[in-house]
Image (cartoon, rainbow, N blue to C red; front, side, top):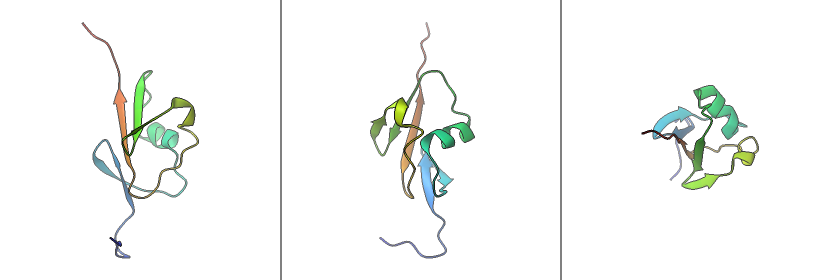
Length: 74
């Protein structure tokens, strides 16, 4: 399905629409959103992304990013 020219490019971040910017990396987006937890699992379009790749992978229009904070409690 083609987008109309007046539709803004978007990505999903934890199921919330977020404006898409060309060249934006996962790491840059996480820093912008304040996702700086010590233990975090990141999934891009349903696939887990290795922590070493967060600064390399550039997001694309329509991507779905999930950031899951892992913590222990009792």
